[in-house]
Length: 418
Image (cartoon, rainbow, N blue to C red; front, side, top):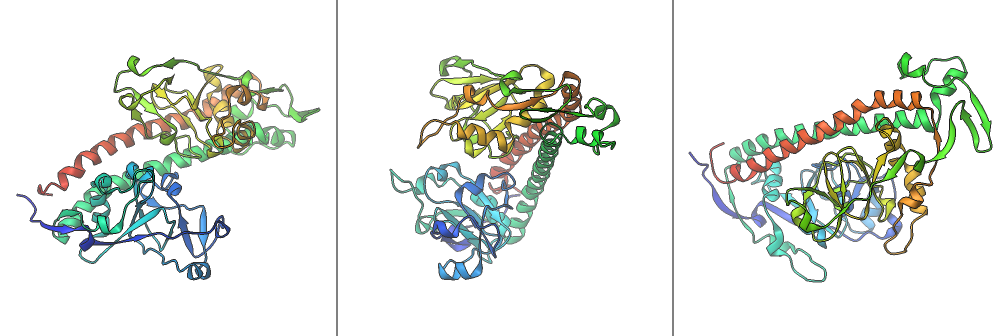
């Protein structure tokens, strides 16, 4: 038995409110009364469903000066200007929030469940409502006229509950991956940049956080070098000593349409978890091949800090450098360097070009590093590899849940019984 529905316009269900322009002098503040969200925040790790993180904050006095009205909690936000419209990224906000003028909010009215409105908007493609050619944009007046089928409030809540359960599982998986990333990064920095295990042993202490077997692989004293103190038995070298660039190009006609494709747009900033990819069906130019376990580094505008661990075999943009450790046991060590802030800054400093700066493997490979002995790096890899294996497993499990969610969305909104 189907759900009884009525036809309603989006204007009946929500108020569309555009963001406002914020002068640069008010941006960059890390504290304030309201988060200030830009289009780029929609892609930040942790903001896949709810907007949980923001780089910019605004105090109430500034908001009043700019006559900026905070968007209330439980609203849905999305891009209203530029190509970002076509990416169809919609996010929920959980607190009063200020929006950049490239964003728009859908503020739910009392006749609609807020979570249901979010899922309803996720089913809609605003392509036909886009105006402008050189600079695409959406107008609130056009969106208000879109007609949808609206079930009773009780059924709205049941639909939102079903889909919300899946999203909660997805969010838990993402949170776990962020924890795994942070743990692996901390362990790497402590072991091979700050030399904490060696320092602790040189002072007669047991390194906290490392098993006795792994701690035993680290030296217990330093030697002085021109570049600074170095654990005994190690040497100074470069990234090129432990990794190489994989150069395997392919053309569109050589690819199966189902081949996974990763572009810079699929790579989240400051996260090695590559949870999204397209297919080669959209590829129109030469690409680079990569294998599962290869490391991908975005060389175009490297300051965006796009580095990831390939979860599948596939192809990627030629603006991505494919990196392979010299041997398998070096994976955790090489990934630790590639994904570090220090390395990204080094790569950025060696970029060529002003509007579209690009770095190169030739420059990246010269990054100076401390090279540990074999037993030490192998022990570290054995300790951290399970973290990355779990991260990749979570990515594939999450894609399965996403596929289930995508199948359920149109069915639940088709009028079938829930």
